[in-house]
Length: 181
Length: 216
Image 1: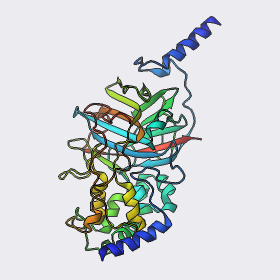
Image 2 (image 1 turned 60 degrees about the vertical axis):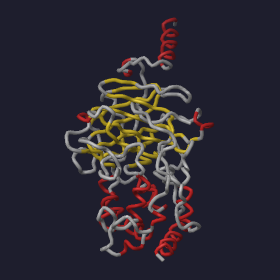
Image 3 (image 1 turned 45 degrees about the vertical axis):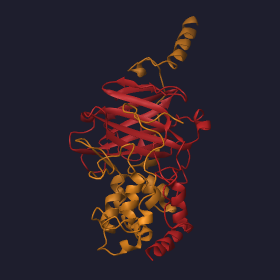
């Protein structure tokens, strides 16, 4: 009985410290059983939000990326052409040189490509879609690619939300994210 | 006249569905604002350029007053999916799930099955970190060449979402300059992992996505 109480006390204490224990399975029998079923997923920023119709949003979250192009590319193209009707012309391109079909084909498989060999950024003026850093102005990049046309100069009031940086500076070391407000 | 066309098209869309909050915040009605709602993911080279960092943020738009009460859900598994051969199918996963004040991490490891259903891979490399509480300094666990963090952070996402909604809704024709950051002063719950690039792939890049899965 005493042993039980002692072990129970130790169990509670262990939850409150940062013991650095690297094999917690050896000490605390936790329940990790069962099957976990998907409810949400995300790759690139704002893809579901911008390109998926309300009626399809949950379906998009439940479609594995390798099936997303077949299920959603046409719908993404329709959405892009509604946002910027100039994209109904297949000769019209965005700043990446993609017409509506090419651009939405690139976006419909919603995974974030992350470089293992160098700069990781959504867009930094030179590198494109090599990752997503905390400070990347991803929304202005997407607005530019949706509304800006081949030179990025079309629809000038719609290609930048003029919020260009986070409201707190990031850290230079892990976990990089700023402390909460 | 392009603006007029855009706004007509946008207004039609708005009738069907007022845009949910970006980036992926509250993206679908079934999960909006719930404990499985992923707001943003990030993948970037670490300060140590041999390492890569993956971040998943969940439960967006938490006010400072509500941050102390915000908590991860023990029934929700977050899974970093890593495709390292370009077919958009996960070759490796890192699983994260909370238990009793700690976030447990399994992997990176080959998943037992691909797709929408997962079991927790308890035979994989296992790490844990105390979930940082609001008002405390960030607790970091370093083990097996990796670093781990879980807890509330400032939401790194920024956007004039309110103005975007007005444009899509047809009541504005352009963004303001300067804009107003709708996410200013709000927090999220963050899960962050830093690990050697060699643990995720040996090519030039990987494809990353994060899934939220609920225990049945």
